[in-house]
Length: 555
View (spheres, rainbow, N blue to C red):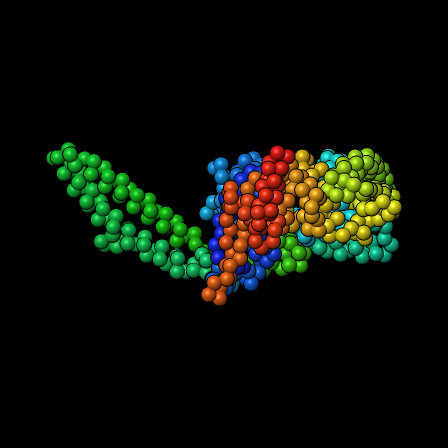
């Protein structure tokens, strides 16, 4: 769960800190007060893109920080991110230059890691997401999640990959003799070029590392030789002097045994000097100062770079893999007729396996669609659409394969009696889409493992009794997930386990937003104001009290 959210200099928010609880957390306030800005700030924290226009006027940067329960993450995710504590802290900044930085427990984290983490933590449902419900691909994915078809989808994807590879190979083999001959010549030329290069994995890095030595070979050789002379060959060489000191210490130690450790210590140092001298001499002899070797290295680096650019390879390993691939291709092309016959046989078998996998997947979807229809209709009835009919149709498009099978899924709705079923993209209003989405989320909640659900005005277009049902379902979701909900309806807000009030204020020409957690009488007063308009009345207070008591008993 999200334990705490701190927002600084984000849009009109100078600074806000929210301590969330388990269950349903609601945020209320007047239109334009900044409720959705807090949702946007959470999205920014979890990797969504943001513009510098969101930085509060006269501020240099915006910051968003969140504390999360580590138990919500998988063991693999915690291990990969080195999270060992029960709570971890994410922080993200955006400065006026447009640069963003993200941190996990004060350690820098890549945006890709942050996005992967966000997918495991939070599921956002807002005005924009309602539009994704209109897409066939989204409807297909939701049906598959409901049906629990992970294994079937995996098998279908594997069968598709094998079929697609063989299909592509068959097409490449079905070419004219002239085109085949040209392709063989081109492939053989490329293979010979890569073969003559005598490629070695990691060679370029080694060559690059050798350049500083080769460029400074003469100087290195001279300096090493000079150092050796200082140690050995000069009249006052270090090793010569060390031998004199060693003899003196030896005599001293015979007269005073307490000096024996010093004698041994100095002997070890002298032996080390002699070893260093031998190493320097060997190094000076081994340094290759020939300009020819430097030219060879430059030429080799240039050759590898040219080959990588020509073949679109990033490393020598890629070139080696490409060389091996060309060798196989030539063999296949030279024996195309034999290979084509084998591929056609394999392709027929692969297509049969793919058709079978798609058929099983389609049957499972069709069976699940009937159950999903009933559950959604039941939810829609409770959400103020008692006569609504809902259909999940699964149509298998024969011969049309994808990694997700051959089905096209369409959700259709008849909101009122006497109306024909039509695709929801053509008939559903904003309020109806909100209710359809909430019905789906309610049905899928037990299967969805995402620990935090965020709803931004999911209750748009509803009111009265329906609003109570929306609030009840959000509270029900809160029993198995943490739910954050931006709402403008007191009927929904009354179900919140925790209630935040968002207020926009203007002072001395500056606008700011304050967020406060409501308890007791303050919460009652805010709900009464939402019911009665800008000012609470005795009647609205009584109504608010009734809402709270009713919500508490239902929840």
